[in-house]
Length: 335
Length: 284
Image (cartoon, rainbow over all chains, first blue to last red; front, side):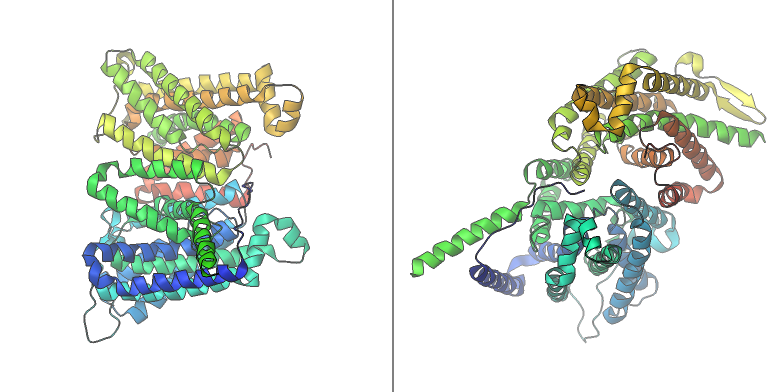
């Protein structure tokens, strides 16, 4: 399936690890201290980037690590978002500690169900099934007007309440998203670097060989599918409150392929690649919606084309090379 | 009873549009291994170009041909500049062609405006036939006839001509076919052009009953994919049977369960992929 040449980033293990830790610390300090200086636009921008980074990095477990091109994971993003939204709007339950588990568990259950169906077939047909399952839920959201608001979307979704005495505002929500982002990245990093993650990459490279080595590859792919569904759910649950609205398109192929674009643009072979991709896509979207909102699909389509034709390895590969060069330059100045 | 007949006829005439789309796309997938998601957009462009030709005073059939030729050219350009670098890389093809779906639908919106348009059928085909208490437009009959003629032509082309034999051989074993000294690239490109031509033709021929709007490309593409999965890729008979089946089920779905129209179609798709992923007439 995957005939693309592999791009492995070679670097000295010690300086590599040290530079990653340094980079992460710097990023965290920036993300924690920035909000007061950013103003509402910057804050909402970064909130959105973190939410979609969870989605894209989670999806990368299936798309990048396992090599299964799913066009249906927006379904779980949307299920969690709609569940959270419906609970808050229609039933008045705003407690985060109730909403989050229910919506994420529901999204994961949907992933467990859809995974059984989708993984019965492979290749092109896997793509069709995931696409059809996502569009199936899209048409349900479209028709079930009383609950989902139909084509107009489910509007007026508030921020969840954490049970603290103060009211949630955009900054508090930003920090909530940030904490969940850090936990998710930790979990995803653990998964990616575990023997399980290595087995997934083995399946991507040569499934038959993995089968002959005694791996139950179906179960590995199935778990990867569910794990990606779980993180899609986490992201969707947060997105509902962030955007205040859920629309049928959030369940369908549009959102699913946007996440895949983030992965490909950023690089599917680098752990933080999808986050870089999400940042680029969302910044483009922001500037397009400011200057030429009616031309956004044109710009987005061009980004799709350019990243497939010219950025096959992903932007992150080049960023990492640059970072390593800086690292070796820094090391040479000390001696 | 008369109502049943009407729904079946509606389904068959809609199925013919789907057949024109599916037969072209199915050969593109079968021969070139290229999943061309822009096929629905080509359909849309064919409809709009044809409408513009009619607006400039062109004849209906001439407009349909021009629409088809323009989309065939677009297909050729896409193949020469993009697809040929992406053989066998399904994931990249999906992202690339999906990008073009966004680009084309936005360009059409830019050029032709946001309002849905509808084409007028030729004046000698605007009457209706009365069946029971219902009337059925003659134009839909004409569509059924056109679809059957093109289908018969494609079957003859695929089964009885030398080029058709090369095409079938290429779908079964590409390397062997090339090893026999056949210039496979030219054949493959022409097949894609033919598919794009049929797609564009279908767009304008469908415009009198389905209209034209800038977001029609993707829904029709999904239906086309369903037809291909049901019929099996790379087979004219499969595309015809699949298209008629999907067209009729869609017509009944719209008539009796209007709330679940698309739902029924996706359910068929999923059921088929699980039970018989090669389709009814698939080559594999």
